[in-house]
Length: 298
Ligand code: OXD
Image 1 (cartoon, rainbow, N blue to C red):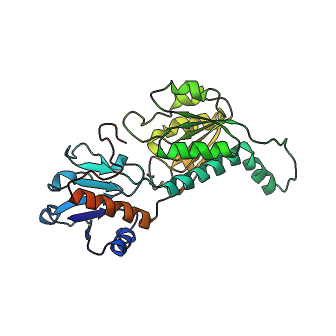
Image 2 (cartoon, protein in one colour):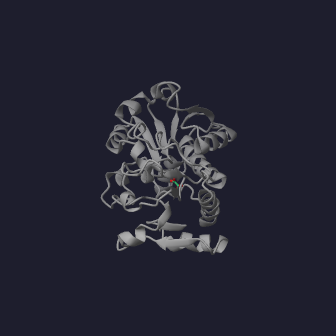
Image 3 (cartoon, helix red, strand yellow):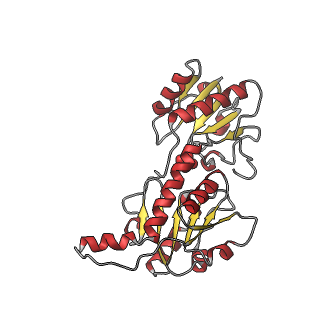
């Protein structure tokens, strides 16, 4: 079985090295736009972050796509033949790292750290009222990531409620939450779910943390809600356009913290181990672990 590696913007070598260390017999082809149709016709599996547009129909033998990520939203183009299985990485270590990042940002907001950073710049030693954090946090998405995030937030004192799309309207859970954390999968149903209407339903001074996908957020609506002072701000580890251009309007909004999709990543070793196990299952005609329901998109 031949596997095509398409891991840009991460270098393919990062993954091929880890895979060859675990199993030197795996046949790997690094993706490049110059690959011929004859070369592509030999590909049985793909290990990828994003599938280039128009590539799927050029892979007539393709049986399986393994994401190098927790999300598969960039691997489900409409021209992907229906029999191709798509699976994702499920990594407890990554989920824990993401939860740590969310706790960091939630505490930074709830303990008012940004205002002390401003005070320090002014050399101003001034105490604000101090209280142990008990604020209410809504975690949107109760899957592999969301449940770990919710647990760690609760452990440090937040009052946490999980939400998923089939339970109650989103504005019901947000209207009394000081912080909303987006941990949803990106699907056609959740794209743009965080828009002006939702921001208006959040209490004044509340805060958004997004560790899922940039496209969950209607960014101009978020910018307007923060600039108006309705939301106190947001921590965005993911953005609609990654990498963000230097002139992206998100950079300059006071209260919005940008990080470049670093909340947590799976290591190439973890990805290699899960990929090889999946490849062996595909070779035996079995379904690999963590295969998504393509009709749901997660
Ligand atoms: C992701 C990841 O899905 O980094 O964003 O795994």
